[in-house]
Length: 54
Image (cartoon, rainbow, N blue to C red; front, side, top):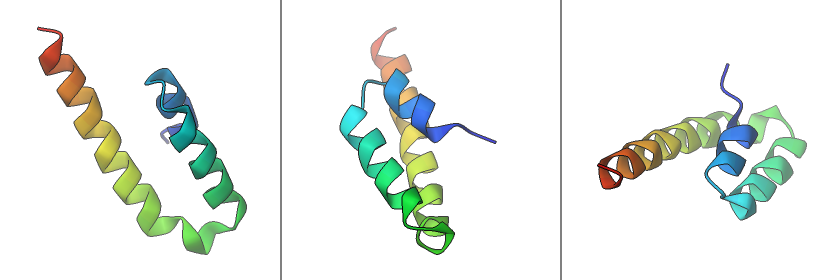
């Protein structure tokens, strides 16, 4: 299981980490599709940063 909060903070996306914490505090029904989207965005961000560091 991915720790999305840790990944967001590691990437210095503190505003997004705060927003994610607020969303998850609202309950599971609100987070299912949001979690899929956030995981996809994090994968793309990791890929983009890796490509730029080469």
